[in-house]
Length: 556
Image (tube, rainbow, N blue to C red; front, side):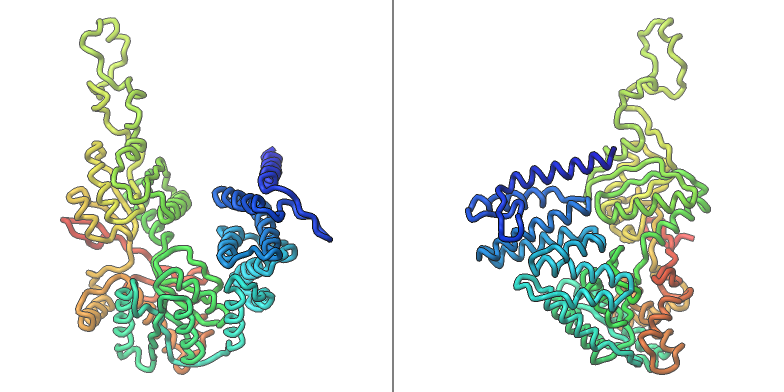
């Protein structure tokens, strides 16, 4: 029945859309439904149709393919009648991309588009998406076969990109070296972060343990052209065995795609989860949400002996990702999620959400908890069950807690504002926990005394007494004249991992040796914790921290 309803809905959409778009135009060998005629009204219909489909994205693959081919016919007709302007072409290019991405269309759907699209632009978009899909499956040569089909369409830069990729592939060669590339921004809004990474890598390079290993710094730039130029210099001219960086998500994904073609292992320092990895040569170094939530689940069950959790999370990608992972991990660990509530990203008021979690939102439904009125007759009082915990007014109702722990996966400034709401609503005895976003003194500055006892996860403990931690702190402060950040600590760890792998090779090292070493890494003792490989990716065991006496301290 559901599939029948979906089919009828799709058919109804098609009829309405094509009616909106106007008449048919017959050509010598094919009839086009919804393709414009020669008047202005038909172009107006195109504008109306585009407005509708942009405001109502399709979820079903067949609908997205249908929309793609419909727009492809319009572009072909506009081009033949010399009405396709460069501005229109660029706008339609963005529409095409929205049809095939988020999530990506399946291979069969993309192949359908390639076989049926009439414009070079349409075929190019589908061919490039096919290339990306297959690249993720580790079949480089099969992926590049689609790149070779990309032509100059006069609108997009896909043909230029394709030629760059094919040029990289033609220069792929197994090279041996003792060099590691570092891609960081030398200027722009991320310059300060780039400097932190450079200082940390220099600390690693200056250690006697690193003798014989050379780190080469290149500017990640502010444009894709600048980034590509630096990447190519590192890979083709400097012949590095691996790359550290970049530090932004977009730059990392750009490099990942090309590193897969070149067979160069890259360890990104970008903090975002769910980066497009494009194959096994792509790694990320930062602590994952899954590692953090695993640590919290273990804390809740084994140390706190608790079983019931409420989750209060922001309406953001970070919040949704964390809540989904928590739902799965907690279930596996035997922790029950009793309450879910979501609040707007960047919220400053949390009373309504917390009231819903504690049954304070509809007090009239709890009138049975009111004490008997004094003017009631004795018979009426006798009929009413005795309640030693009754209250005189609905405003005096206590919160009902069916969970022992409150997980708030957000950042310190927001959670700090939330914490005073708990005592305001008389919510006591609840353990608040969070993730690495809480590791900031903003939590204490905004939460004041209400931040006491909050527990959260992170990787770098600046106060750790371990030998490697003390050595790193001493050398970094001596070089940079400041304490190291978590980013700096991660960059130091990645640098030392590369050094360790090169020392094991005892000589010039190939990219494949570095790649194999990263995929098989086992309990590397980093300053951000033990680092190990799991299913081809770098993982860490999260550490726990707690707010005590207005300070953030390690929690064991």
